Image 1 (cartoon, each protein chain N blue to C red):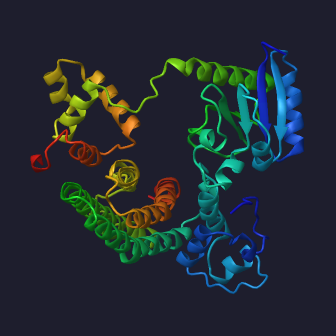
Image 2 (tube, one colour):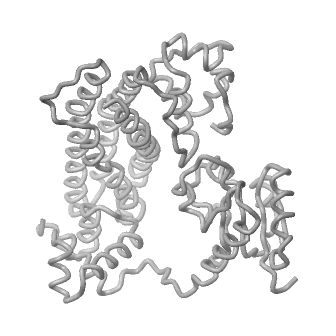
Image 3 (cartoon, rainbow over the protein chains, first blue to last red):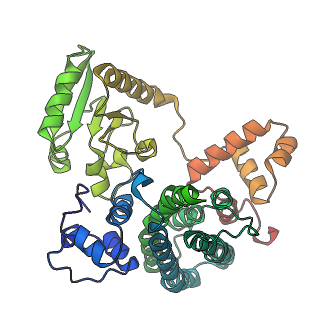
Amino acid sequence: MNNHIFTAKTKMAEIITDYSLLTIIDRLNIKLGFGDASIDEICRRHNLSTDLFMMICRVYAIDGFAPDISNLTKSDIPKLIGYLQRTHKYWIESFFPNLHTNIHTMLESCDERSAKILNKFYDDYDDEIQKHLDYEENTVFPYIISLGEGKKDLANKFRIKDFEENHSNIEEKLHDLKNIVIKYLPESASQQSRINVLNEIFKIENDLNKHSVIENKILIPLVSKYE
Amino acid sequence: MSGKIKITIIEPSEIVTTGLKRLIEQNGSFNVVKTFSTLQEYGEMPNGNPDIIIINPMIVSDTGSSDPRSLLQANDNTAVMAINYGPYDEDAFRSYDGYISIFNTREQIEKRLSVAQKNTSDKETYDDSNELSLREREILTAVAKGKTNKEIADEFNISIHTVISHRKNISHKLGINSIAGLTIYAVMNKLLDVDDF
């Protein structure tokens, strides 16, 4: 999105100018076909706070954007969790399996040595992703949801700061994988299959980075306000 | 004109460009030699090797590039600086040699320009080759074998601090940060046998 100077009165259709913004509205369950409705109107129709919506858009549109969560409230939490869950679902059901298939095709054209270690690298990474997302889905999100519903489970010792401390970085290995495919995989590996793998990585890199910003700079501070 | 620090500004807003030029040039040691409103205009002209290029970071991010230096094909001793318009983290400008904020005073701007220019022109001694040194290859091999910093420090008889600094340089040169990724590099380059892990 070229123009990040948008307000609640801007037409929703005007801000959908690239792939990432399209992804956001889909993850927030906003259906296309806005006509000339403004951001504000569409958000109200979907019972979604305009502040939250614009904040997510700005995280994606502006590198290094520092969200100010002072206008967000408890009622934004379920929407935010829903958004994060849909993102995870997309990664697990569509993105990573796709990347996996592309990597396997690439490795078929590699020498045995490279294929063996890269295979192991990717399998380990796959496990890491799975664990990372399982932890969020099974421990962190249920805690936040019950907190949002006003249930204080005193037996549960978990606090959002534990999440903050354990929030591992899943971008690092993907970044390494990208450089390995670009710089170090021998030339003998098929060019087209490498390009396919790189295209997949380019597609997700930004999404992973922005997702971390949303979790670390919106979700964690927002939840700690209500603990 | 010689002796003055030559500055190029790439910024779509004429208000900003004109204001910035006026401010900067009040100090006799800076000279804004060229101003462009788009990247395309910049690309059409020989860049004239300015000492500093000040660019609106939106221009860079709109191209999808995260490396302003290569986007601008700037010389190694040209400092590439961003204009900070607002609620951005400093992190956003990590790929630049510095930034100025539109809320800076004239003195602050002069200081930032001087610092960025000095840091960049001093960089000539910096080892830019991506070849690993012998010692770095040894340490990389040890890391890939799963040794801890403490074990490596003992083995090579160096401080842990030195090990960490070697590891930083290795990751910077290779573009690989994780131990798993470094292991792959080590195996592919036959520093380590594939059956070793």
